[in-house]
Image (cartoon, rainbow over all chains, first blue to last red; front, side):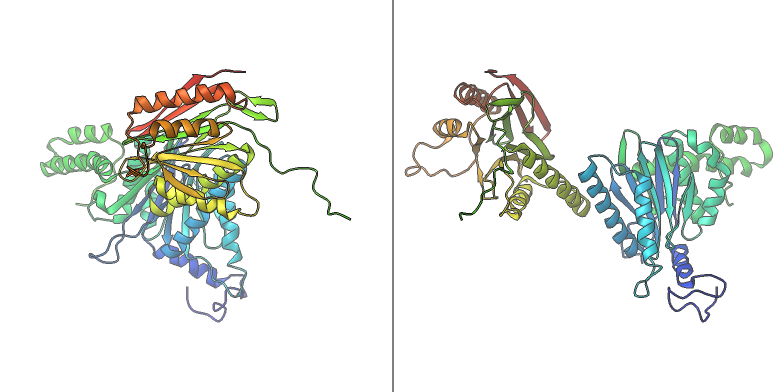
Length: 271
Length: 223
């Protein structure tokens, strides 16, 4: 994407029918650190990479609780994300006040999308520079939506946004068909493995990622460091054993394969 | 020509009595379950006690539609607080919020007579008593509602220090044990039920402690 004479205002169309400012806003999402969401029939897991400005600072908060039954993970301009989260919380509270029932996720994302669209059609505004992965549970089941700065939204079985999200998406594409029937534990494991894909070589530690879950009989909450580390340990150990087996030449490939088959399809380790 | 007055009232009184007593590490909140209008009974099983936060429980008599609306507003405000502060509201904070909410409608008040009970930041019991427009005070015990005039003097007799001149009440916490407090509540309600037609049917008692909330339901006279 290069600078051109149609990209100054959000209210200027290009001759090819594009709104460049909106597309630039979507670029901002790609620059943010990765956020991943996946869902089964009964649970939704949101995970993200903890990016800190510097070694001295704490990391940015990228996953927010909207209500007991809705959570949101963001990528892009986190300030915009924080403001939109506040809006979502307000909508959820107001809906409950009026109807005495939890806000259906599908309604929330429409409100969000309409709010984003307004900013693409006013000369004195700019689009929100944040992509939102909205995960929630309502009467019709578990849902995961992606809200764009453009005002579009889509429903997903699993999705990843932000930098190096393509690696996570490739992993998810391979496995998403099984997610619907996944157990809660398997879903968490897949989320963390997807996060690992975006790290590309960096060792996965529980301090590097934040994981949250919500589901039937389980209000939205974050998993604590120990829980995440336990899940990481299950597949890191298998990978270590794999390495050892390979190191001993092809002496016991059967043993390594047995470990691998016992565990889930572990992504190949960089050696 | 004299000014025409409305021939209807936006308010109704659904009767009932609420009591709360604070202890050193507990708080007892109690209310009868009779809901009435005029001389008729609407329900023998209507709860006037509502949990607002882990450590704050509200009991209100008066116009129950206004009470319900008030509870909804407080619940929403509490959710916002939790999002912003990542924790539940303390009882004193809820007390101030309730006062502000009531005064907000100073010129069309919530017809609600409230008693807020709970545990403060140190885990000691606290009771806050209100009027309809938000004037409130932290006390060791209180009664509101149709039976309050029968109950309050008796609670004063049992719980207040003998003479404010000789021994001013140092603390607003009463030196009662939990069992004694519950017993006292049952006694006062039994008496109030005898003489107040709007109080009776069942008594709901909630005991708030640091480890959780216990509820007891006791029969009262149904006449």
